[in-house]
Length: 312
Image (spheres, one colour):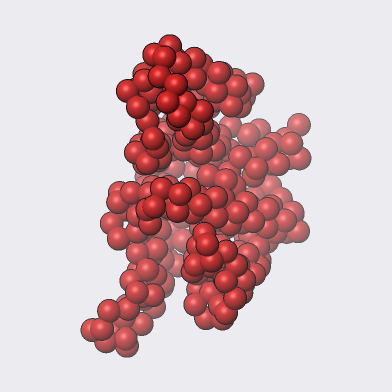
């Protein structure tokens, strides 16, 4: 995998983060010593972006296997956060063990081996059938359906969906050989930018709540401004993709819409469990799933649209 262009793009994003960090610092100095939740949240988001860029840059430099291993670790921590909030019992321990130490590594091994026909059905077919069988052997029927569904959902969101990000590196797109790392950068750029821009537009113009029961901070104005801005950004960086400008904008629109809707789903799960964040892995900004909830829902759709329309 030729990662030169991907690293140059990440370097450009690093420059943008330097600028964003300076802006946040200036705003902090102008705000004075008083606590400011808005600036605290903005600073936490910028820090999370720094960590993401540094990790991705290092993985791209090391090659495709390193990227796959990196996202495998991401899935491991994300699954741990999900299962921690699930209502598991002793009868589920074997199924949970298999999820972490058999299904998860097998999914990423299949992606590394480019076995498309298997990694696309391993979790939604075989794991869905095998894990309930393993759990039912222990004869514990107390809340069995809910317990089984929670384990299955954890695997789908934390492993199956997230694994489609490194799976982009396996696509054989005509005229795009050696530039596959840029697809990963494009997806993460537009989805994560959409999250930040929705937050910024919401703070600037937000008046009408879009889903107050799920995410009180999200507004109609923030949603429209963030989605439109991220879509324009995607169209503007079309040269890093195999898409034409209008196609890049459309793909960015689909990815950001799925990211927004996925964020609402994940917020609903957190409200159901009575927690604010999935975890505390990222200092000051929750857990792994708090940063990748949008990516988890957008990655499979983006992957399959790209594979269906842009590969032979």
